[in-house]
Length: 97
Image (cartoon, rainbow, N blue to C red; front, side):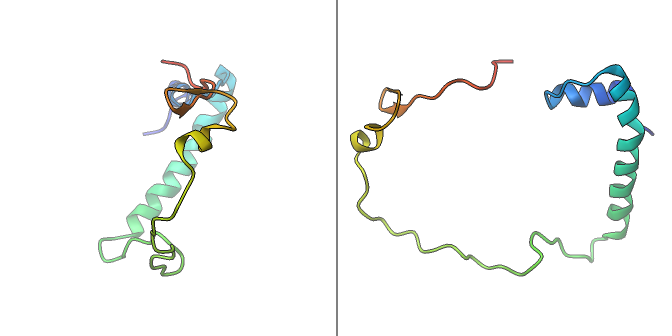
């Protein structure tokens, strides 16, 4: 089952990427190749292959969580360009929909 230009347009909408109809038509077969490649890797990686989240085995490399003296809320907000109800106020970057 291949991706259609409509599928690509829907994905682009979900990702909030503007694509023309021509771009959607051109990307559909390219994305099909990518999905086929991922599927072939999935076929090879059977249940006996352990999941790999890191290239090297890594065990907790973070420092111990120790409580130390820190800024008060007022001190932390003193340099803020805007604050509201004891919190940093930042401009809205995402729409409601």
